[in-house]
Image (cartoon, rainbow, N blue to C red):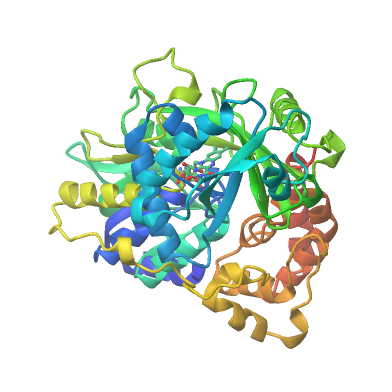
Length: 515
Ligand SMILES: Cc1cc2nc3c(=O)[nH]c(=O)nc-3n(C[C@H](O)[C@H](O)[C@H](O)COP(=O)(O)OP(=O)(O)OC[C@H]3O[C@@H](n4cnc5c(N)ncnc54)[C@H](O)[C@@H]3O)c2cc1C
């Protein structure tokens, strides 16, 4: 991935078969699939890849036990199948994680145990392991820091876990390998039309503020919660297609969970589920489901969401987390496909994806889950073939390895998520392999790799998405940010003004991750 090379392709290509707007899970998945089926594909992302919702998930590759409770069987079956495919194609990025549901009532273990047997059955051959009932002692040996008062036992089940932003970057690399052209920091600002049919996009390169237009046979809007803005560039008075809902996570130190297993609370005070998940040496706790009216690029966690998580998580932990224990807080916006039932709460809105085609030919991809990104992309590219009149080619992504594919992954190796690339990173400079932080792993070589091979442009790209410091410990990130900016500057030949500017624009983002 090289931004200058992408800009060169842009100038050399008179017409694209497909332009994808948005570089989150959906857009990147579509770019992989479309390029693999032979379409001349360009993806434009207005910020960095996965800057939106796709870096702010609970990090689960899951069927969704909660959707089973809601009776959304077809979604669970689809997501369980996709979970298995994702694990098979990206064994360096998706791992098996066991979840324990602690029981405090006599009926809850058999009740959830039965539901989880159904969940196991639905996963079929792609299952990650059978769920089992645990007695009180077994529950405590799995999750030693769970609240012991009134504990009766528990149930253990299996789902997948991943690093969402790393998966996004790996998809971007896969798409590039398949022949797609990708650009970050390019914002689509309008469409060109002929006879009322869309035939191109106008965009602005945010790094030099230059405007350009390009021609395309088909355009896909994969902009998540910003989808309605794009739809209105096509049809001014279009009805909203998206209902955004905010979800917040708090990141705590490992000691609050102390063990390799996650906790799943099946019924919080607002009737949702809550997870406490070990991730990158910390614990991610969340989430909430708060309907919101306006979509911000950097969503802000509400006080009541923070209190809700601390209170509900605290009820299940021996050591109750306080505000001062929170190392990072992040909020994400679910791009839920709006239903006709306006009274439905956002937690009841289906997580199924929808694909729409406007009268001028704009394809919009709405809703969905990270877990189902591949199926969303398959459905979207099938629609692209129809709308563009391209010859129908079969989707191959069910068996397409994701960049870095490594079935022998050692999860305790800090660079495991780079898969087969990790040795190349370590070999860049023998002296560049020491971590700049004790709280998370980030080396000079990783920074070098991020700017050289992964299109990292800004300081935030390195600290938030090429590595995950901002999400793991925003206070520690603040400490190492000047050093990281200087190292970046040395690799891209920028001066101290650039370093100063990067620190200045990163500061408000950083503050949003600190309580
Ligand atoms: C709190 C929370 C927890 C979740 N947890 C999970 C989970 O554990 N597992 C799971 O499977 N799913 C989970 N999800 C769902 C999952 O994260 C989302 O479904 C998925 O990330 C959405 O991806 P997307 O590509 O549609 O949107 P996004 O990731 O938001 O991507 C859209 C992109 O479009 C870009 N864009 C917008 N306007 C323009 C423009 N004009 N020009 C160019 N680019 C533009 C944006 O910058 C953005 O990067 C969670 C969601 C939330 C909110």
